[in-house]
Image 1 (cartoon, rainbow, N blue to C red):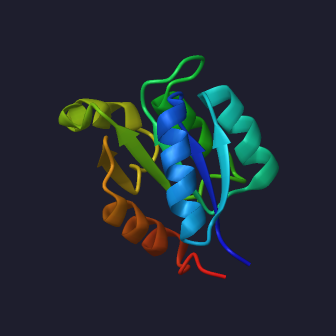
Image 2: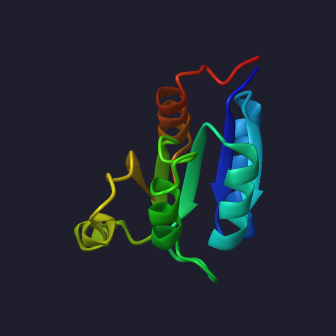
Image 3: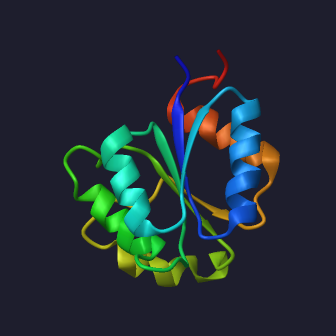
Length: 129
């Protein structure tokens, strides 16, 4: 059985790109448009890895991340932060106080090879069938 990745981003183009990329690598993909939807999907599906955008409506990626890491059923799921604001990484670090930091930050636009390598490492799976 392949690993499941949840992609959380308010930009349809990013969700489509990541879904296509990871599907071709053999992963099962779930998507969410915002933090509220993502929390619900994560609680229902318990994905193996979550990619989260920082700037989203309803619940920012940082707010979502903090909720995920404080949820006993989801706290061990690896999370990768996707952002066009990576130059503010040290600024965002203060928002992660009280929870462990994300497994990785990836700058938008994401590079295919970097994403595939990261997904394989964090899921412990090849992604293939």
